[in-house]
Image 1: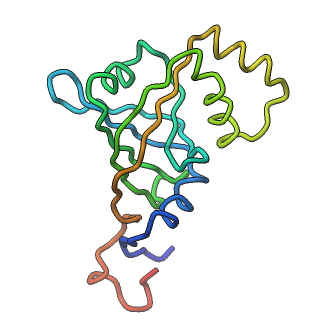
Image 2: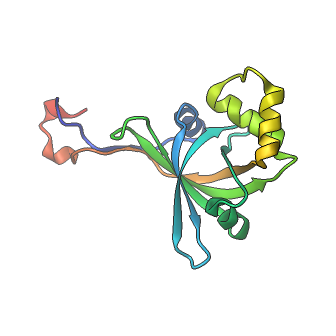
Length: 159
């Protein structure tokens, strides 16, 4: 297998959302009370408003941190470890019950499609007291891929 060159591709918001929408693995970064970063691996999606959404519980650190300081970042990962990724920065809104129920339906749809029993799903979300974290994207970096610096690759090896 040929080595690949690292690369960064700048994209507009449409290109960013096209990249993020099919990816559902991310690392959410919130800020702890002492100012240190809190990293949380999450399953995430993009809703119809173009926000990144995460389902979680009210007592989780990421939720408590977002209530105290809404600034956050997400590293959106590809399924392959060496795949492309992007960092987005923005602000989180925590959507609590009962308003969260319908937003959790949209969250499920943007990741998995249709549920076989929406009434059952809604009841489970109420019973579990799930909340939705909505990350409004304010800025983003380039879509990046790791690899060798291009200067170390022969012209035929660049990918």
